[in-house]
Length: 633
Image (cartoon, rainbow, N blue to C red; front, side, top):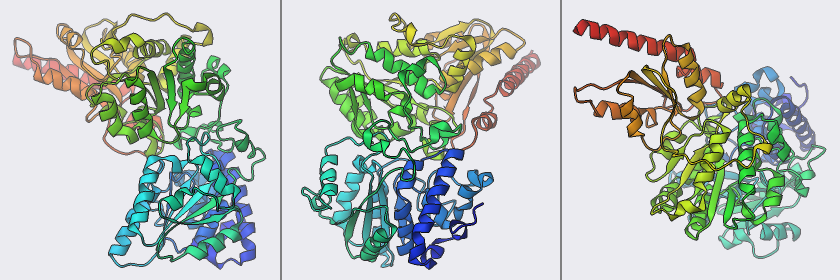
């Protein structure tokens, strides 16, 4: 625990009570605390270091929670949490897990929403202001947006609505000249000219929306910010306060952000074992890391990029598209530099990225869109209509699918139910790097588009269980293995990897190693199957299992309800053999619930996704079935 000013702050009133001359001292303590916290715990440190003074000024001027402050993405809310009664989580390592990486109303009345995706703060603030005005209530509504969030399409929709709605609404635009992996888009040139001109240049994107506009050049001067916020407090119309900040201020290498040498030199998450909890792994790693597999997300991403890169010279229409966070998915800085026009970063714009890819495919190109499963949720309409309904041969590489110990905003546990229930999409779940590359070669084969309706393909990138199994068996691929010969495989046909009887265990994607472990622990030879895909049923294989199998067991590391295993259970329930019989089924998967930073091993125990629990369930079910048969006889 600290013994300075910061440790005395229990709520925003304590910030208001400080003499103005002590505010810089408070900011310095906060910055030091952030750096120490980041080195110990990981997290989105760079964005918060840049927003220290702005957050102190916000709570100095406004009266939270009566004045509602909405932090976009809310990875920028660490300082806000320190000033609203949660400082011990940052000062005392033993209490670090008591505070999440994003805003959360369950933690504090000062947090308006649980937010972990980008661009929605203005829309949310617009709704808060609308309800306030309808009730003829008082109070300011403040949306804090920036760190790349402004390029998100929903942010533009919100700004458009704000201008039309009118009334008090203050948009604080945190302009740190970058986002997680650099800014992309035509809007950033005019923004740069606004900075260069002290906020006077035209065109002014905010004025174009019909919004009032103020510019604060020294966005890390707490007194200048306090004055700017006091000037707009209780304003009777929407206003944008554009503050120019330095991301990572306080780190020796924070200037690297301006050089483009790394996606975000100020975020420390990849150096911490719990990096996945905030989805903040922004460090870039060299291509040579492919030969040293560690993080499955980066390892399999680099593997996929290496395979695609070898085709760039001969396939001008082959394009990799990333809607932000490329380095997290193994799309390294070196790869992007070499790829040139074969790589496009669209900014934080998942909906646009998918529609953009559908356009490329329609014109004869071969697009590959790479991002995380929880981010693809934001593009559901485009997945459904522009891509699937139009049968465009787009390939989606979906990372972090399945169960994890992540924050509730970044869980991939719902991806199978989401992708697998959209008509026309082929959803593949590789169980090795070799399968991944075979599936990628097939989905991006220019010859595939010659079919009547080639359709899109989702490849669920392998996770920790797959990489761990490959490392244990020594089968993990390295750069020397590429290119691999193109396999002639029907990826929609289940692969029977172990032939047995009585029970068949189908382990989808990341649960395939678990299926192998269960089979090895049973007192009889069970059949083991790698389904390879979750978009359709391999009816011929399911029917063939009837002969020697009394029990069909499905394993998936995703939501069971609406998922893959239920489809197989439903198939057998609805299709009896000629004597009116059908195998019984056991389906293992996750409950339909939000989980927040629950360790993966605890989730697996909760959902009985362990060898012991599954083996016990199989033995008990077979014993029950045998007892029932003996009673009938």
